[in-house]
Length: 105
Image 1 (cartoon, helix red, strand yellow):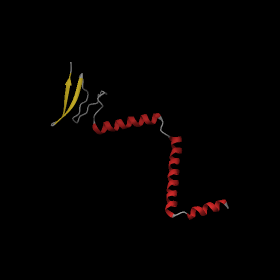
Image 2 (cartoon, one colour):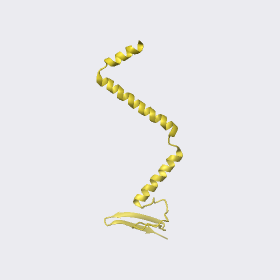
Image 3 (cartoon, one colour):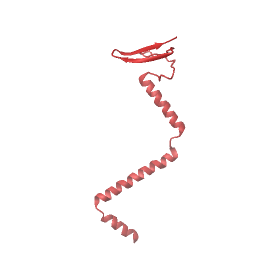
Image 4 (cartoon, helix red, strand yellow):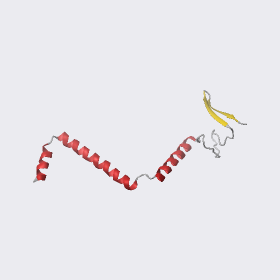
């Protein structure tokens, strides 16, 4: 009886309001589902570290370059530098392209 009264009130609402209520309900269900899944299979710190390492590897493979704070012993045969033994190295962008300036003792 009480249930019938509430169902009748819902049926009397205009169609756009009922559709919006359905959209809000589905959105809440999806968000709660992902929140529950994240509790069980959420990102652990080990997974985040692996993902960052993989992103760095992919970026390195795409450019063939290494960060300036990391030495590389891998020779790169297509125009980039392998290992540079200098006190200061700077790559300068000029109109003709990139130029390497090195200061060594």
